[in-house]
Length: 73
Image (cartoon, rainbow, N blue to C red; front, side, top):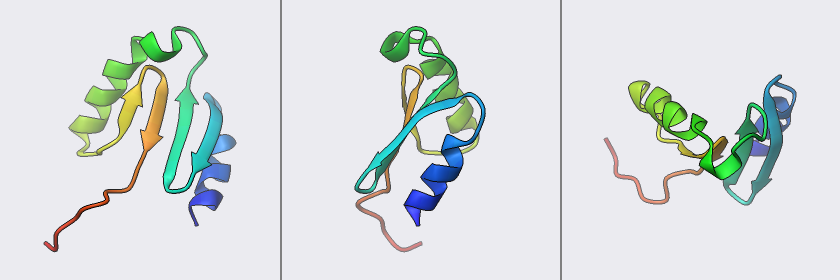
């Protein structure tokens, strides 16, 4: 199932280098300027937090990982 979503994400303009390994997926947003040190990282983190999304941006690369430990609500 994740593979289908990763394939769809690869077709979105502005999204590059979409990849996955096991349960982890990653993609780069925008151009490659700055990469790991891109100023886009903190902006993405603020955007995700405002929407209660737990995603991990490192520079312009966003990593999506499932929680490995959850409790019933």
